[in-house]
Image (cartoon, rainbow, N blue to C red):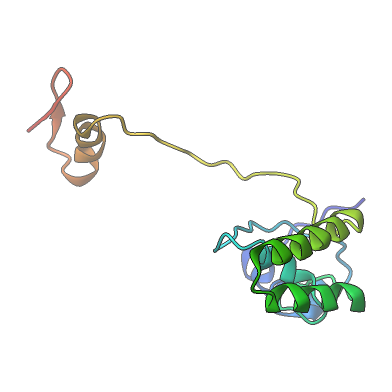
Amino acid sequence: MRLKTIAPNAFTALFTDPQAREGLDMFPETYYDSITDPMDLLSNFQTGAFQNYAGYSDPAYDDLVSKARAEYDPARRTAAAAQLQKKAADQVLWIPVAEWPTMVALFMTVNLLVDLLHPLVDPRVTFGPGRATA
């Protein structure tokens, strides 16, 4: 395995220019589903799909994507999506390998939120016991 450093502007081209991907077997991508429909991700592996960066092509997979998208019955649509998921997993079309560092904060009270945000908004704010004061 050979790792290659890619400049930010060249990295962006990986998503839009097939020539930029020549010679690469894989590259990291932060992907998130915009909707709760599993077809949002599974459609990416259909022949010619914009995010089908590897150029995967399987007529049976394509037909199943079309069938799932056209299905209005939730049980049948879910069954088709499950078949696609199995096929994608069996053929290793997507390899989730890492999660980028993410900060998650849970604000328990409004006072805590005020205490944390005031210094960002007004640097003259100082902290008292449990409350922000100016």
